[in-house]
Image 1 (cartoon, rainbow, N blue to C red):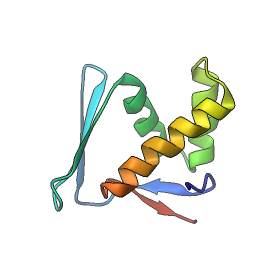
Image 2: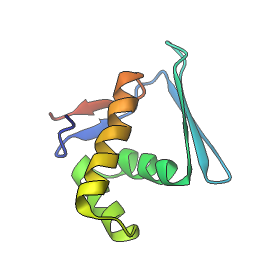
Image 3: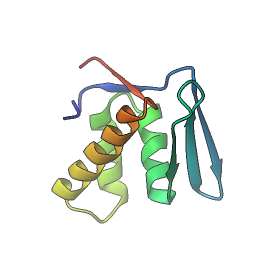
Image 4: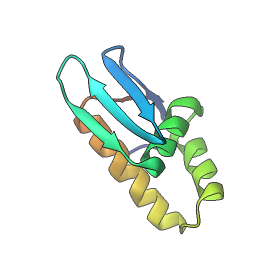
Length: 93
């Protein structure tokens, strides 16, 4: 389970590229990658620029027409996948 007060940190071995609103993450060390649609790319942007997952969640809740429970599930699912692939780390858990 993802701790929402935590901060998302990108390891030095991870690259992110965006093209036409879609993103790709690549871990150079493990060669794991993840392709993101436009919503996933927006989530990534907020995860990596906001001071906490909670702050990113709050911004997303204001930007998208989604229920809090659905968004919480989506955030936990995407971050879980990113963590599993070594694309992010969480600080302050």
